[in-house]
Image 1 (cartoon, rainbow, N blue to C red):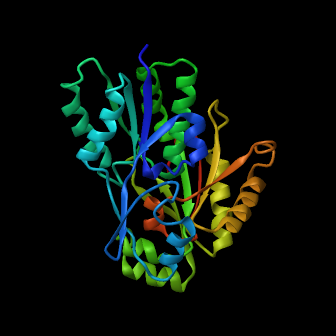
Image 2: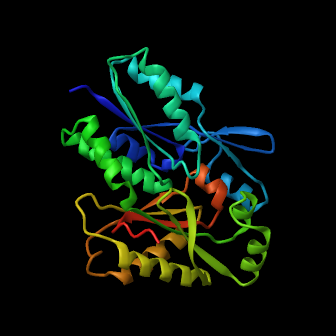
Image 3: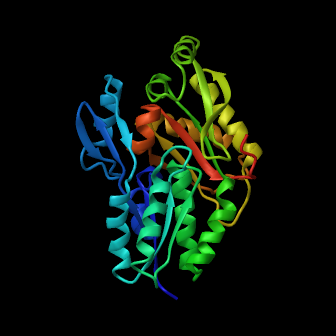
Length: 296
C-alpha cells in the first residue's frame, strides 16, 4: 500500500500540535489589509493572533484569497516526487474556490505522475469542522485504511459534521458581504446574535436569531443537545476569535445541556484562524462536532 499524505488548507484551523500529532499538512491561503499581504499561517508567523484581531477591532479589514493552481502544483509535486499519494480535503466550495483549483491541478499532474493518486474532496465545511474531518481521516489512516477507504469515509460522513457559531458583532459579516448593511445596523441596535451553521451545500446559513450574547450560548447548547450523536470518532471543539474567557463560559453552557453525555468528555479550545476570522471577526465563537445529519 502506497503511503499517502493528508493535505488541507488554512481554513482548517488546526493547531501546530494537532498537525504534528496527526500528520496533517496544509496549503496556505492568503489575507491582505491596507495593501500588505500575509500568508494565512495557522502559526501566526506574519502577524500575531492578538494583533490580527486587535487590528480588526480598530477598523482594519482583512481580505482573503484562495490557493491558486500554481500553488497547488508546488504543494502536490512536493509529495508526488517522493512517491506519495495525496488526499486533499479542502475548504467548502460554498465559501472558497480553492477546492475547484485543486481539481484542475490534480487533472494536470496525473498525466505526469500516472502511477500516483490524488483525491480532492470538497469538505462542505470549514474551520474546526474541516479540522475534525482531517483528524478523523488521520485516525483511519493510522488504522491501516487505504487512501480510497479514507476518502470514501469522508464523502459518506462529511455532512454529519455540525457547526454552531455566533458572532459578537455583525460589522465584519457586513464588510465581507455576508449580510446587508441594514441587517447589520438593526441587528447591532437590537443586540441580535445570529446562529450560523454550515448547510448541506457548504454555505454558512443563519438559522436562529437570539437577543443577547449569553442567550446565543444557550441556543447553541440547545441545538447541540438535539443533534449530537455518540459516534466512534466523536470529538468536540470550540473555536474563538480572541475571546478565550467567553469560550470558557460558552463551554460551561454547553455542558449544562448534556451533563451525562459530557461527563469525562473534553471540549477542546482552538483559535479561530485568519481565513474565517477575517469574515466573522473578533468575538466569534463556534462549536464543532459529529451530529445526526440534521443541518437545519
